[in-house]
Length: 444
Image 1 (tube, rainbow, N blue to C red):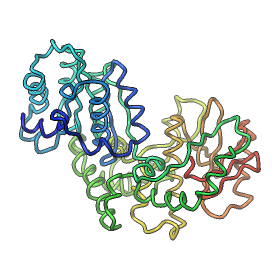
Image 2 (cartoon, rainbow, N blue to C red):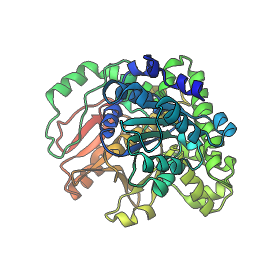
Image 3 (tube, rainbow, N blue to C red):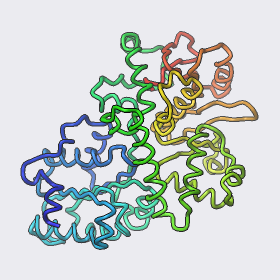
Image 4 (cartoon, helix red, strand yellow):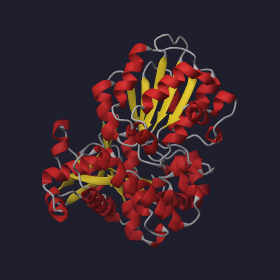
């Protein structure tokens, strides 16, 4: 155990993780600010989207500015280690405190950070962490895992008020550009007071439009998983997404935590969602197609959500109490889960529109937890986006724009007293018509 822990912590001997010098995603700054609070931190997210890299970069930040290297311990769990030792977490913590800190629990005086990666593999981990937090408040835990089913349920049971849970989303377009060593576009915000596009943004987009458009189309296919940048062959990338991400979640992660659920049912439902993202869900039809009851289907759907594979978007209602009972759509947690199956997306215009809509949902959802769609009869608006009490109708249109494409969103914007509506495109930036902001998806 001592040797294993030493290999996980090269900073104890004055060395460092290679990840310390890698480009930092936008969430890194937010994480460093969280570490100044008295709470421990939990990080949940889809497999292979950068949780381990983030933890190792946090180790570098802490060792430079917060604590001496020995006061920072990182450990990564894997399935084989846990199977061989059912007390692995306790052994790791005891070995660290007794052998490396030469101290005892309850008597630690200096601030100490313990980072535990893939914590969801440890049964009842929260009870162990709580015991350490109760006995020694000098310790701050930073834990990560790839199943909200276990992370969030154990948090609510044992660590409520002690651990701040955040969700690490797959990289967005700006993160993708940063990870790949390219200049990301400036941040643009939809604002009720907006009356014209800032001149500097117009000039920037005008001189970078082709570069950004090419990069955005590439991001849609591969940007959700940072390690894909090291694989140059498209087929190898597809196998990575299918075998390393999706199949691992469906065949190992979720069945291990969803007792009694058939992995084949999970796979069938995921395949339906992966083909029907952005469309209205009909539970009765889906249940019949899979061959399960509606109740069981809802449990399977919740499992896919807990594995960070999919998210739901609900039909707009003024009552939050009714939100969960309204019609719903499903979206994938990164557009790469859909787009990796295809060649260059410009050759698949019928696919491109849906993939862009999926990405727009994710980008807007980061800014608005109440994001919804609007549907009455046959009329539908892709998204209703809230900013400071104002609702903006947002429609995605990746093909050739026609005058009728804005008719409905104009009328809805007028009905809801929205300052303007928003039309998301692939490469058009235009606000000459003050009732419709035309915005390329890469600037969202």
